[in-house]
Length: 369
Image (cartoon, rainbow, N blue to C red):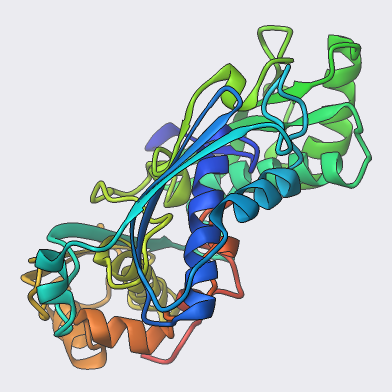
């Protein structure tokens, strides 16, 4: 019997990297509200009580970026520069220029906004066709935020991480070996109360009882203290949580991040399209697992290559599936944008708890193939 353990992690929206992703995607959405053809590539950097915004924007209209940044920090729940960051007092530096005319030469005629490789993946582990470990890690991270924002555990602060180790038998998830939750908190709460509350309100509310047994290990704040967090505890940067954003390490990654990029950047749009295709190959019964890779050259419309791997679970040869995909889908950047209707402000809701596996996103729709 083939038995192995696989681990994935997630983070809350208050994690410093996710704070930066959220700000970048919020800026993108604000420009798309003004101009659906806006070209946006924005990075955010957070350190102590300071936010730096830099990048390129070409759009018909202006966004009050400083006001927007403060609103988003407040929305996440940061208001104390002594323990994390304060939306009222933090310094905000903005350095925005226009898109390079050399890049625009290719993009303006429907070509890819960059060269690169992208991957999509789906499997039958869960009802959302996501690997079990990352699915569970996201649900725990989301619940950790919910109990904070709803006041159920009012001593929690925004920063936090989750990690789940799953035991597989013959590529099927059988049980959870380990759950790790690290969460920022007010100084006065004891470690004993924190552990008791987190297990009751987070773990017990999320994890199916049949996936936990007497040998499952649960760790809560293993250092015993997590008071200093957010950008004061660690710097944050857009695009540093690409494995959290995708498949938890269970599938390969092309290396390009998503947040802060408009859909002309194939790092984002093509990865969304490949998830759609992989999910539908699994959902339509062609295979139980599917990984698909595509490559582009800057300024060129058609992909340079398409590769599909079903890991021995397919009912057709993989080269036949490649031909099926080519016949069914327009994989030019313009074709992807039109098919998924990507020139609209939908990106803020993708930022946290994974870009895949959410029912209300266009690339998650199941179609007949």
